[in-house]
Amino acid sequence: MSDLALAGVAYAEANWGRWVARCPRPLCTNALALDPGQNLFVCTGLGGCGIDAPVIWPADPQAIEAILEMRPVGRTRNWLPGETLEDLLAENAAHGCLTPEILALAGLAGERPVLLATLDGRAVGGILHQQLVAAGRREIGA
Ligand SMILES: [Zn+2]
Image (cartoon, rainbow, N blue to C red; front, side):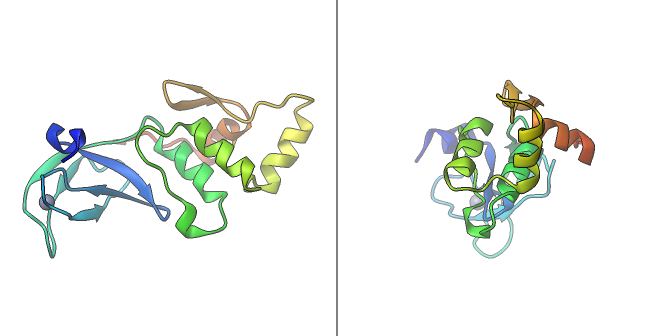
């Protein structure tokens, strides 16, 4: 049993490019897909135990999605609570998974381009943030 399970809340995580949450009830092994912004986990379906629990989202799910979408292989589009945007971006860079658009913009931005600036886990500046703004920022719960 993890501390997360004891807390009685369901943590959103990205798994193969979709948002899911695991049931926080001890011994229940159910996990369900989440819609962005969904704030209540209800443990239903085959194997569901019937409890409900609030869903805890990362500070900036849309930025996580944008970074994961740069990865060409769906099963590598994963994020777990505690991983930072910088962690994900560094993994992308290490595996050659920065999109040509990002690299082109970085090239235009000067010698030391800022790909991403964050504050409290949210993208607030840099090239990736500019792309998110251009695409339309989504607020959780909106
Ligand atoms: Zn359950």
